[in-house]
Image 1 (cartoon, one colour):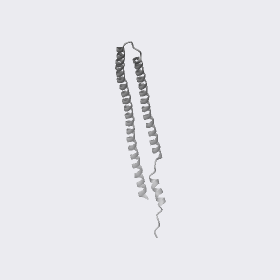
Image 2 (cartoon, helix red, strand yellow):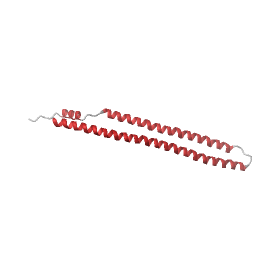
Image 3 (cartoon, one colour):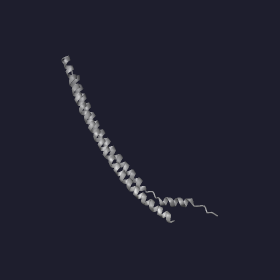
Image 4 (cartoon, one colour):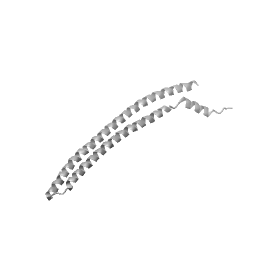
Length: 147
């Protein structure tokens, strides 16, 4: 009579031949949390700087509006105050928008630097893992062939 193969034993042997390295998953988790922390820092720094610029811009605008709203002796003085406010606001807008652009450019450069470093690390890790997997597979194949 034919003996039924023990599938449980075969499965255990197969799993033992191709072990799973849990430290790789832990390393990936740690790497991703470190990346998230760095990207969050870049974003928070950009937000803090943008908020400071917005606050300064608002204060400058309110100061200019308070000068416009002061009582004047002649109607032409109101026109002069509005003209000065518009010119000052235009100059202020240009300065503040340039500052916003610099913040965005810095955040973009920092993020690109982080992502480039991650890509490089992933490439190195993938090559290392492929070598290790190839070695393990070869070893497991030789072991299976000898049985």
